Image (tube, rainbow, N blue to C red):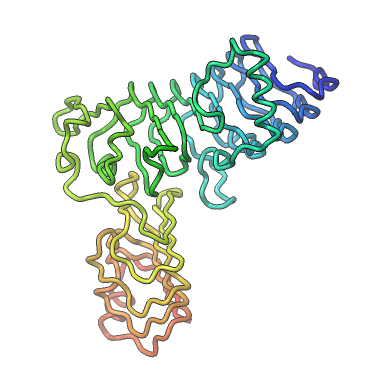
Length: 372
């Protein structure tokens, strides 16, 4: 245990190492006076959770080591990391994390781990880190650029992983988890002169199927050198570099369409398209181990809807096309498994018999229809 005011007098503290003790819990106000704290090592203790607001007064924290504890609640971790806008080194390896998703979906509806990594270095922080590197050169062996992102999640219990929130440059270690699926719905940084990403995935039971085939888009395979996966039919372990895309999937997975935002929430793949002029193809929910999609193309200028043969469109079960310029609606433009359809604020003046019969008289699936 630590007394809540043990560090109260150390207002200029830059680096604190509390590793390899038997600390079970921390007082909420432990770092209330440490505004200059840059590096904190809490590794190899007995922590199962972090108290709320633990880092509210450490805005410049740049490196946080929590490895070798018993952390299991991702929501608790994410809530504590929210004030840390300059966090660029995070080690939560050898814990008991089962997901990178927070259960709190009320904020932003995109509960991704560590949105903090989108911030760049402040002058005060850079000066402080340069001072520490000169003071303790023997401990400064991180390598790489000071503004790069390093996340260590190895040795946890993760079963899937999304790459959508990664920024550049970054190094992420996912080795020795239980990951069967990795996916990306958004375009994320690939290697350039200023960005050399590294993703370590060895020691995971990756499955070779459609949920992996997206990495052939723009040849993301180069990010996963040496990655092996297990074929579902033969159970054989194959080197990804030796597999052709057609061996993984009969259809070609695509990333999120331009001007759209895609994310997973509960049992749905959400696709929100603001400013889209037409829909040529959509991500399919099978890419993220889901069965159906929610498509929101409200507040656009659509005159007609896409045909239900459009790639990925048939998977949509909830469709919001309110506030467009639609004058007529046909069943050839509607996915067959709709449970929710919003046509408010369009230019409809009649509904044809086929629509009325299919979606009102005979449908056993449609639960909500808005026409006002």
